[in-house]
Image (cartoon, rainbow, N blue to C red; front, top):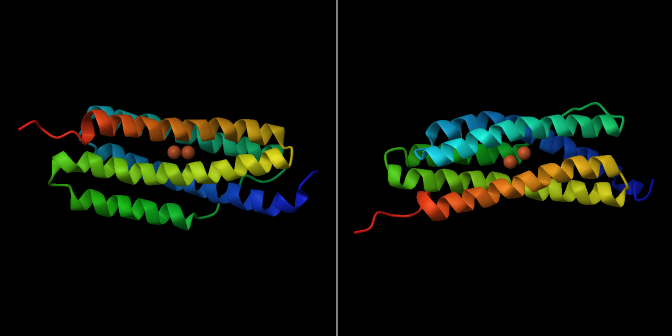
Length: 164
Ligand SMILES: [Fe+2]
Ligand SMILES: [Fe+2]
């Protein structure tokens, strides 16, 4: 296998994002519960379903490498979700700002995922793990779409103030 020196790193990154995706399921439930705008609520709910699928893809990727699908606690996701909770509490009583705050928190999460999957897909390509590259490349594309969708919601409703 080419670039075998990347093997441990690839596996470690996959375990980290596996843990992160599992932690995120709980976080997305809270974000959906807190969102004021029905569009934003729906975006979070749909990403919850996608996230379940991301976990399934990771399981297939581990299987493809002949490994147990084991995750580890992702400290970064833990911190991002903690901050999401803090910001939700802070703006709970300001509905005009709350959704913008939730979008900011969710986009930080998406960017973390995009960075992780981006690295994983690159390693898989360099190591010629075609199946892993294909599977997790689909997830990477969905994380990017989610990020763009959140920007779209921010530009069209969440961050747009009332005309005075
Ligand atoms: Fe994900
Ligand atoms: Fe995501």
